[in-house]
Length: 163
Image 1: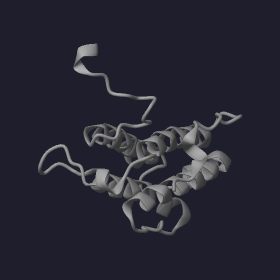
Image 2 (image 1 turned 90 degrees about the vertical axis):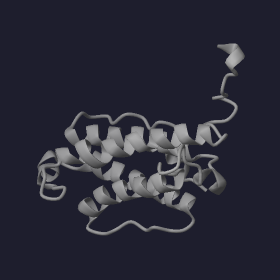
Image 3 (image 1 turned 180 degrees about the horizontal axis):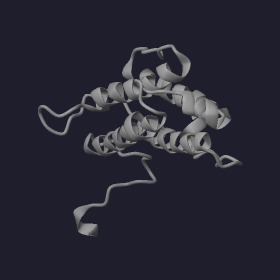
Image 4 (image 1 turned 30 degrees about the vertical axis):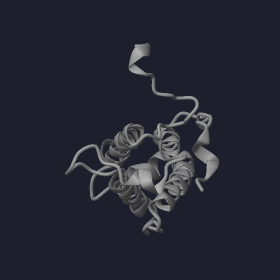
């Protein structure tokens, strides 16, 4: 079961800082990832668009790896990689919630001292977080192809007759 923190988009931070801006980016990622995973089945996870393309399973695995990359550099420890794959998605959301709180509270000086593989903190935005947003969208698109669109009942595919 998915943790419900990102089921709605969290309210914006009350102050403006670089850490809060990164936290808000995490809010968007968490929200999109939550809805990409909500109602997803193990059967859906096997879906791939074409032979040789990544399956939903493989994209979720990569998504956890991207969030883990940030998590390791912020906390000095790895995230859990539980089985089955959908529990990995839930673990990714829990990690994002923790990261969000950390970035909301971090001072600009402490943020400037954070490095991502010896690169400045800006690389958190340019590399793993941006990439993770991209892959949350891939999961959403692929699950539609698998016949299980995001937010069933609210996001129904139109027939070709409806234009």
